[in-house]
Image 1 (cartoon, rainbow, N blue to C red):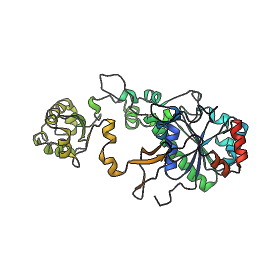
Image 2: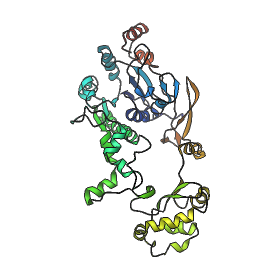
Image 3: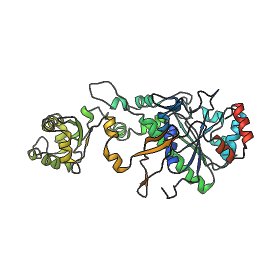
Length: 402
């Protein structure tokens, strides 16, 4: 992309690990920010860096996982012992010319090691300090470790997911991490915009549990105002609109959503059963909901006569429909190539590494990507930018500071 990216010229330091924080700062890096990922140095050449580097089962090289690449495209890596005096001196030199100090450490840690606004404002009054913790920094749970799956359980996600007569089910992906990281990025960008105007930064906090609870959205308001506890519905159906659920075709599952009233007659006519439109059991949204099981049975019999591709060919573009793909089918879908959601970058261990593109477009074009950095790959460059020469960098490395 030849166009200047909107966050070029902004520097984001991030003491980050695993999923939530790195996912959020990757958006900033893809939008042009210089994201410097601060990671613990390895000891005797082993075991350092973001814990994500050590998550299998697939590896680019020893202690460099493919998992890590999912959250760290377009960044630079600086190893730095933030619990050492010299490490903090380096951080403070970087803070002087940075715009954001982000982290996703346990809630009680940022203030202890000096990553909050009170600790850094004397060095750079405009610094924005963004914190993405499990339970927040200002309550009795600040010291608790916490992970995505716990939040799905406590926020009600698991109880809402799955078949009515089955056990609670978590999402197949770590969606709370991704939501929280994205919300952290939104919050810090808003604070950064204000800091550019006012010259004064602040702390921005997002915690995984709050982010998860916030995503309960309309079922939350239904319960808080009406005492209505949204139940699980068969086949992942919408709780209050039908037909809007998975149906079994002759060769697999598909999701059909005649969710808005206008789609019901279109659906019935298109599948060749216009008589259903004015059937008194199904002629209004309320009647269709009341008779959901009967309608589902009728549509099952109809959809079971042909393959998914047949129904998709009839309905797509007219009634909302999608095949229920396995993960490999979803990623091999030619449509992803059409819209540019797959990309290839060069990594030292794989010159054609396949990645997912950013969902954000600027002027109709996907954002550019480069592979996530090897551990400490940018130590010399970053330290050189703040005045360290080769001898000083060698000394820091010998002491285990970097």
